[in-house]
Image (cartoon, rainbow over the protein chains, first blue to last red):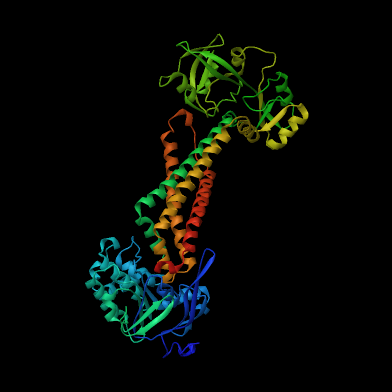
Length: 245
Length: 377
């Protein structure tokens, strides 16, 4: 299949994520288009991994499959040892809630609730008492240096502050995998770097992985590992961007 | 998550108030129109309700309601009195006449002749005066709605009327339920009524009967019909006959039905559209929640909570609006005695449940269809 270790080794001391022979097709009218071609990949814990590529290269599809929100057409994905697409639907949803934190490009904060409640959403969804969840979320906002904004609604916050609330929401339930989609796309260079520093500082731990989809070359130097996707295939895997990019 | 769902809803003021307006307007239209409809058709039975002491009404076999009656010979009264189980039986006359007022206007009135001796046939309560005034010559008692109609704010007591060339003096005001047409009603003694209404050979409209203790009104009606050949109806049956007559012979049920249906359709249209817009505006948030780890069941609970919230609040406002309407018009004689039967709020509640279930389900479909992965696109 590939030079990657066996999938059974994923979890425990193995990789945080083990992707084996993943393919994904999309149907457009009469045509079936394959956007990922037999991807094999291990993501080690404690790493800040960038997924880089042009629009249409398949990076969003790959990250969606890796975090359990898009079924692959072929192949297997193990996250911390669990074959996530083998789980029943409800179990997969619960697995995401407990193990994965999401940071979306457009933040997708709920406009009608304050920053602390927004950050508390995963805890509330897990069934924690709302007040307790909000208190914990407020602590996380403190860590991200926006504790004084906890009572504000998203539309009263700047883009950078909203991004931090989104980061707090992704980290508040202490997930082992954090997935970020273009976290710096809407930010200026300085804010972008600050967000990346924060992610490295707060999100990354020995047993935790962070995967970031980006094409922001201003922050490439902050990655532990860079994977370049082209036409649904990984064409580069290293600590730095290839020179021709 | 329910709290978050409610906050999502109430945080979007425009759509929240739009949804409330839609539900409240729909509830108001459905409830208010049904209340008017029910009260209006119940007026078809008002003449029966105005004589609560009569257990059984006896009439010519072709008579259908208090207003659609065929007079009987006076011997019918004796026949009925001869039936076992009849505690008492009194004559009752109902006829139409024209009255000329002091100002020279003509007004169509109902003349009701009640038993001379017992005065059975009069409404239970009087607004002004007592029933004893009927012992005085040429006396009529006018109903309260008729008073407003003929005399406005002025007191009718002592007013002289010309009733089919006969003199009539108003000496009392009865507290009665208005008729379906709100026509002026004049009560007088049976013997006096015979003089007011132009003569034909048979003039006895009804025989009002009280049942003795050992027999039920239902059994008595069967016995009277069997022994006299006359039509006998219990009080409730005859009241229903009056209501059915209006339902069968007027376009009222259809017209009110159309308005109620419009209320329902308007409700679906406003609520459906606004709810869909609300969901569409929040689809990214719902997608994000699905990605984070909310099950479809939890999402459905959130949308259901939102629908239920606007449904309940909007329904409450709509019912309050109906109560306000009834209260505001309670002084108007046309709406005298209008009430909200308990079944009507239940019917409108069921309609609102259908509206919010339907619109909530339509809105939920788009949320369910949203792939969690869409948040990355």
